[in-house]
Amino acid sequence: MLRRLIAGVVLVVAAAGIPGPVAAATLPVQLVANGFSKPVFVTNAGPTDPRLFVVEQTGKIKIVGVGTFLDLTSIIVSGPEQGVLGLAFHPDYATNGLFYVDYSRKVDGDTIIAEYHVSAANPNVADPASARIVLKINQPTIGHNGGWLGFYGENLYFSHGDGSLRRSPAQNLKRLLGKIGRINPLDPDGAGPLTYSIPSDNPYVGIDGRDEIWALGLRNPWRCSFDHATGALWCGDAGESLHEEIDRSTVANANYGWNKLEGFHYYKWAGHTANDLCTGSCFDLPIAEYSHGRNCVVAGGYVSRRPGAVMEGKYIFGDFCSGNVWIIPADFVGGTPLPPPAAKTSYRISSFGEDNLGQLYLVDYAHGAVYRLTDS
Image (spheres, rainbow, N blue to C red):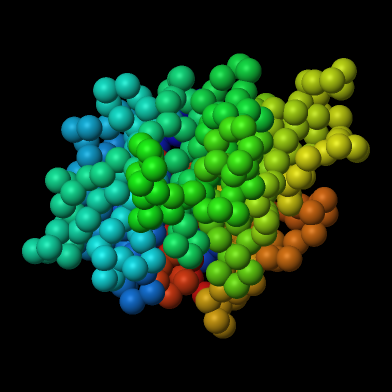
């Protein structure tokens, strides 16, 4: 996941009380659960299901307050940027019991998107024998795996990094690295080896390349989400050396510019000095960026649409190294200077998440904890 960071993580344990640091007063949180092994995501299984599911990079998916839902430790490889990285429940999970996992396969390190079914005998346990490989993506290195999964309607979206290759394939339409893809996993076309169908309105259908591509030009997208009110897709994309960015799109065919751009800036190409602002032919610029320093890897967040919540109509995201948290309006104008962090925390923020009621959560990787953002 975050190879260049983890070596520098220093665990801080309180002398008494709840393990881990206390967030700044501007980010009121409540501990939900801890004791997780390198948690990288928290999510829910649908609007009628109050359970919280936590993804451990080391191989297990757990239900808060219940136990292990699915154990993949025997078939995955877990490292700084590998492991179990994504989880998404089908919109009809309450009736069909299907969910999808993104993981790094032990035998070759390739990314696997696999379908699983909940156990017929126990709703708190998945059936490991139900596994069906939906999609395999060759990974040339152990870096930039991305790994987010999410449904919008019947279609499954996935985001993956560029494989940490020196010559990034993010602009190569024949590879899924450095892309956001969109498929329908429950509608095999029956006309070849595909175990899924491709929506006919995907932007590259019929063009020489991969029809699964929905957007391109990403370096290492780390956590995306849909705005439930507008359908906008928000993604945090980890930068190379100077800038982290937040991308927002409501249409297909976005090209976020990597490896030509990093944030709003040129990236050492076409005679430009790195960090020059892009002023022409700028692809699809991010909605916001922030610079490195104590910051290092963005953790994309969520737009709160919980009625009456203090955060309603705002997007929250953070940074893994600094623990900084930003809050911006969902209609934030691209190119507008990013406001100062709304909070400076001691968390190693690996992800945000939400429950079935739209309550937002924060995942602390270093301390193995999940916190609820309160409505204070």
